[in-house]
Image 1 (spheres, rainbow, N blue to C red):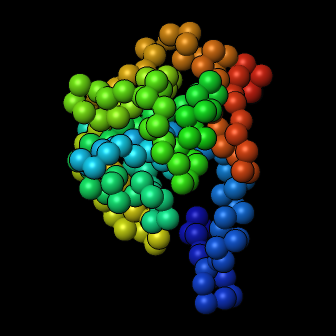
Image 2: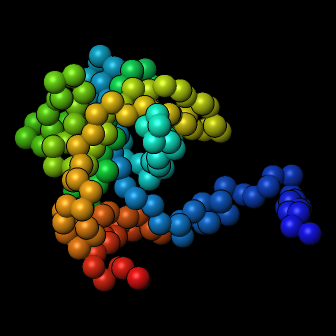
Amino acid sequence: MGEHVLVQHPSSETVSADEFRAAFRNHPAGVAVITADAGDGPVALTATSVFSVSIAPPLLVFSISELSSSTPTIRRADTVVVHLLGADQLDIAKLGATSGIDRFADTTIWKRLPTGEPYFPAAHAWIRGRVVNKMEAGGSTVVAVQALETYAPEAGDPSADAATAHPLVYHNRTWHRLDENSKIQ
């Protein structure tokens, strides 16, 4: 009793790429933009794969696709900035998600931290961290980052409440914002 049995899918693969995509398309995720500069110019990409792993030490992970033009730079970078976005930063999310453009052409929306990393000051919160591990996983790389510095509203600050911050969520190929109406408790 209590034992779980793994049921194998009848095909040679466990599930098709389309089946897997469809399952995750219906799983909402927070939206982040990752920036880095390995010495040959800043890059950015939008990711929904960011999550915290540990608070001691403070670690987060995200994955980057081999198809992204930003991947080679992020793989070479020692540090990155992970921007956790609210709905008010939808323009930054779309910027990081658009391929074939210079994401840093508009110099009024980004700066460099004193440590040199490119970042978007308008982000609701950001975490600067050192890349501590990378793992190849299919057509992606999973990147583990130890937080070195953060910018975020303090716990209890009204600007951290969904009614004010309006966290940005991606679900079924569509951007969504959380607000006071999204609370279920």
